[in-house]
Image (spheres, rainbow, N blue to C red):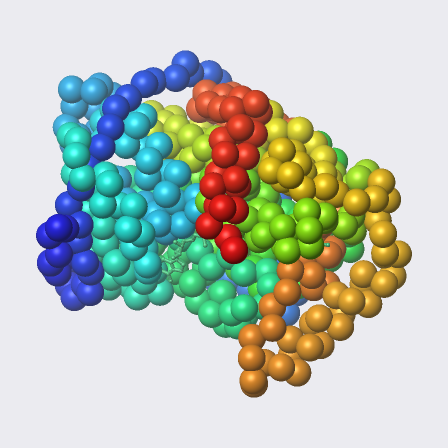
Length: 440
Ligand SMILES: NC(=O)C1=CN([C@@H]2O[C@H](COP(=O)(O)OP(=O)(O)OC[C@H]3O[C@@H](n4cnc5c(N)ncnc54)[C@H](O)[C@@H]3O)[C@@H](O)[C@H]2O)C=CC1
Ligand SMILES: C[C@H](CCCC(C)(C)O)[C@H]1CC[C@H]2[C@@H]3[C@H](O)CC4=CC(=O)CC[C@]4(C)[C@H]3CC[C@]12C
């Protein structure tokens, strides 16, 4: 049985705690050198601008960033570190938690903060690392501050991922923007110096004009204009994180931040993939092509995204001057394909077929159906939540080429994908098969 008690670190915290544990270690090779400049700042149409008074993004910390905090020496013998993962029970968060347990040799305590704690935390009960599960809400500043207090590193992955109109724009803003602001302020107040933020490719695009982003990198010029609450919130939150780089935290040292921008994540736990699989099963094993095969959509395996988070968090201290205030796309060797063709890499081996070499419906009809769905959602909202996959926004994203090709993370902190495409594919197929067997 988990030991459940209320945590009372600095102030009032409604938090339940499960003491648990796990695993072991390996250290990857490192890259060197560096560069400056973070690009891709978006404009949110119809959303409030951030407070600009804090001044421009701080690109470099110079030698300040190299100063060590007590307990942050670069050796496995050094004092063990306390990590906090917000959103640690989500799709990505769970992989980050497991990856930290396996591959962060300096991990002493792992705090998993989430609104909904997963039962799988129970299985982490044995091992040398103390795992503390904290049930809390990032929109509650005091809960966040209590969870952050005493942590060396925060990986802030909690977020409301909603492009289907399930939540209101205000709620999305509250969780993604105010929640991030709370995390930053908690770091500043409690003296936590290292913050890795899970941003999104959506901070850049696709934009509202449907411009293709083809094999782009962090410096590619692109007109980032958003209307949808989700990308708007991610863009605003990312900006908060980057602008916080260099702020003095309690104790006088500077905060070091960076943001990682995954493209569409896939892998074990990917609910939309599971939904497509179930839909295909319901349709007798068929899925119907809606998007031209020529529209390429960037995808990245969740294990590699988690790995990049762990590496970035680990290296932020040593490479503060280089990495502080920087953004990195999350990429790996996954092939460039259309959204549907890519899904078929997993759903095909699970017995589904994609019908049509070309879209079966003309694009104008899809646009019409997407608009109709949006209208129905609005009309039905007082009665029932109608949130289908197809809406004007998801259609625009799926129908716009957005692919990333970059080695910035490799050059800055030695990131190489941990999982090959073949491994990523196999793991995902096994998960889809297992998830599908629980489906009906
Ligand atoms: N799924 C994707 O393809 C991509 C996701 N991202 C970002 O990655 C992060 C994780 O996304 P996923 O794992 O896909 O989503 P998810 O919904 O599976 O995980 C998010 C986690 O945050 C938690 N959470 C939500 N609101 C919270 C709150 N108010 N307080 C505390 N915890 C809260 C949820 O309970 C959940 O466990 C998000 O920040 C998202 O914006 C970025 C790019 C692509
Ligand atoms: C649900 C979409 C595919 C359905 C298209 C249809 C109805 C014609 O078959 C998904 C297509 C692209 C996805 C998004 C993309 O991968 C980027 C994302 C990044 C994030 O940060 C969050 C998730 C998402 C917005 C992702 C959501 C589903 C799609 C829109």
